[in-house]
Length: 281
Image (cartoon, rainbow, N blue to C red; front, side, top):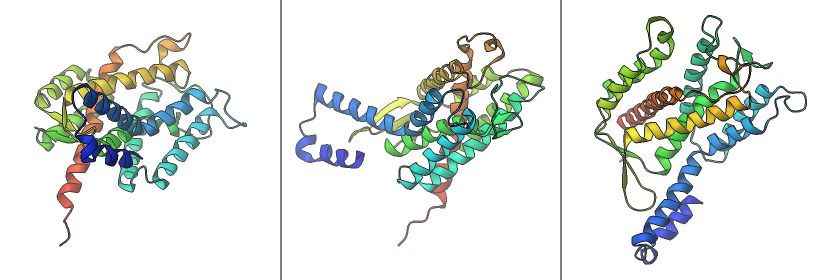
């Protein structure tokens, strides 16, 4: 559908008529449509989070229903060609990385948050569907990269980007023992990506945005989704056990750093694939 619409508007006679406010409006519309398409897994998964009752469906506990829903969405997207097999494998990687973090955070020694309901698919106190919340972030970045034809200008050296991403991930674990170095890592990321620009194409012209702004914006929307999820009681922080309260705004920074890490994984996978691909002929 998107390809058909693109071809229609890229026709010379139509493209020649797109100027001024009309062009801005059409490009904004296309940007919105492609962003919505990139958020397809996110939207469907969190619709399930919002709509599935706490009691579950047909005797199946809620967490198990959410796992079935997440798997069904992924299988459907792959079958329908909305997600490539390479993208699906990357999403599985994000699921594994996120699930490992969840197990640590929910463990008895840490208990940063908890999943209060019963489920057949809980492992070490963590329902298996939880990894898909992290996979949703990776899915969005992967899809947006392809649909908006993303390119990165002034990307820092990959070894430096990977090092910062690893330190961000490690800090999610170690800050319980040796102090939280989140703001130091944020400062490193700020310096590392200060000149980095995302070049994207909503229609037929390139547009630019500072990559750091993208990190912050995506982190904000994840924070909003987290508020919705905790309001629905999917998981709870210790201060929400008695009555629900908004997730502290400081979590926004944590999510933004998680986006930095996720973006780095995607960019590194794209970089590796570009280096190993040998054109035929």
